[in-house]
Image 1 (cartoon, rainbow, N blue to C red):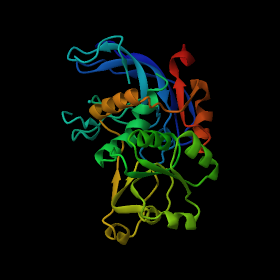
Image 2 (image 1 turned 180 degrees about the vertical axis):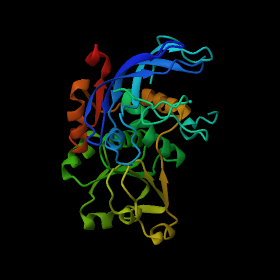
Image 3 (image 1 turned 45 degrees about the vertical axis):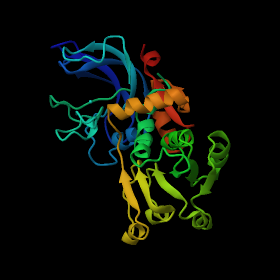
Image 4 (image 1 turned 90 degrees about the vertical axis):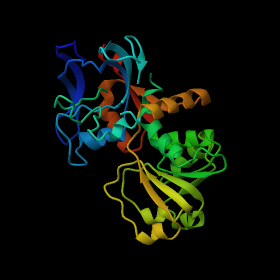
Length: 324
């Protein structure tokens, strides 16, 4: 945060190198501009993207990296041109509401270059925070590919922070949902807790073959490389494989697309219009993420637990009470 014309020190937790280990870090924000909003962050969800950039998985990290992009907080100051927000509002940008893809260059909440040339830093309501990344990331492709029509079928690959939100939206839309997981331990939760119609153990080749050609869309939320051809075989004619995870590479044979007119799509997140629509949909249908609230002091342990799939299903850091 900053005062108009004057930079102000902020406190975050930063990784200084590829170890990804986070520790307290003080930095300065630029002054609040005429189109800016300054926010005091109260809560922040943990996403696998925090692992990707703190540990330089894509080779583009700009250290020190202060992660955190599933942010909820209170407006502390608004610029002179801002009309839709006021001081005290609780908050979680391109005219087409696709500001994340702006041709002038998107500005992400961390590991990105701001308009003044400085490197953006993130900051690590408890239930709202995960919706602002995991929620919109799976909701947006469902809307884009018309997967809000009852009777269609969706498969969820990976049953974590993203996958469990995809399941909740799927059931609210009246779809049939199948969970594909490498871990048989996820079966009970998938079927009995979150209401999946089917559970398929993806390491069981015979099980996979029997499931072929059954779904309109597959949402791939894994961050590891595996058999794309196998997943494409599970789609109905004209079906789409939506990649929302960050595997190191994706390989497939062209015939896997040609035979069946199948498609591969991807998404990083969405703009403000779709985000608001998703939040309204969640409020109307009482859709909430399953979370574990932690203090900032245990963030390194939480990141390791997330890597090892030891969380149900999303961590949220209580920034306000951890730092005050």
